[in-house]
Every structure is written in structure tokens, then in C-alpha cells.
Length: 46
Image (cartoon, rainbow, N blue to C red; front, side, top):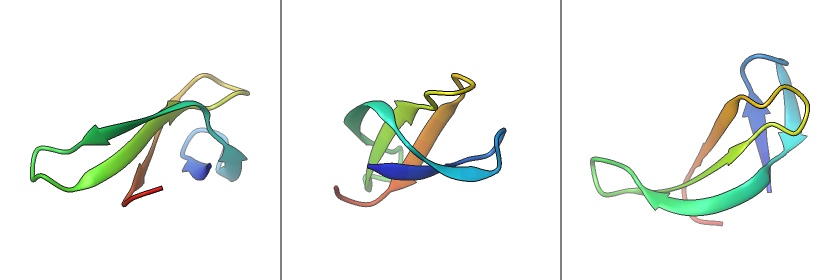
């Protein structure tokens, strides 16, 4: 799954994606940027 990395400022393929639920109850996917290691989020289902 791709997400936008705020540190690299590009779209990248997320490493170790996992489904999470945000505080407001909406689904999201959380992972890490394979280049810089920053946390990445993508709101919505896979």
C-alpha cells in the first residue's frame, strides 16, 4: 500500500502495514517509510 511520506515528500510503498483504528473510530493503515523510517498513515480501508 502506498502512502505519502512527509519527511521524503514523495509517495512510497509502506513497509510493515497494519490496520489500526483512530480515536474517532475511523479505520486507518499505519506503517513505516522504507527509506527514512518515519511513521506513515493512510486514512481509510485498504
